[in-house]
Length: 194
Image (cartoon, rainbow, N blue to C red; front, side, top):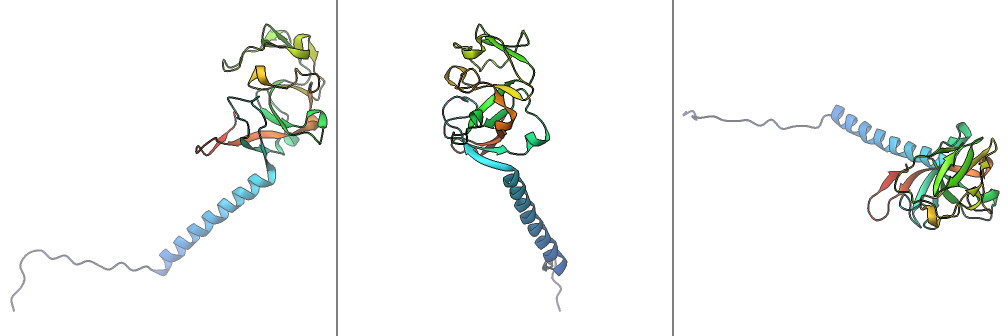
C-alpha cells in the first residue's frame, strides 16, 4: 500500500459538553436577573415625569421625560446645583416644577445686576446662564428658613421660579425628588442630569 506524502490535518469535532451548556445558561440567567433587579430598584425609587415649558433649557427641554429619585432627600438634603422636582407651595393640583437649587436653608439670597448673591457674595455660575433681567422678589434680600430652598430655571429670563411671588422659596416638604436621568431628545438615549 502506498503512503500519502505531504501534510495532513485532522480536525477534531468540537462537542458541546454539559458543563459548557450549564455555564452559558447560568450567564444568561444571571444577566436577566441583574437587568430585572436594576429595573425594579430604579422604578421603585424613581418616578417619571415630563418637563413643562422652556425654563430649564438648554439642560432640559419642553416635553422631555425625566426620571426622578424619590427617596434621596429622605436620606439627605438638596445641594446647590441639584435639579429638583417639586409642587409649588405644595399645591397637589399643579404640575411638577423642575428647577435648579441656588440658595440653601439659612442663607440670604439677593439678585443684583443680573447675578445671584449668597450672603452678600457673588455666586460664580456657568456662562450658559443668562444675566437676569427681572430680579422679582429677590431684588431685596431674602433670608431662607431652615427648611427652604431658593430655585431658578436654567433659562433665567424665561422661568417662573423663586423670584416669582406665587412660587417663592421652596419648602423641603414640597420637594418630590431629585431629577436623576433624562430621556434624551431624538435618538441619544438616556443621560444623567448635572
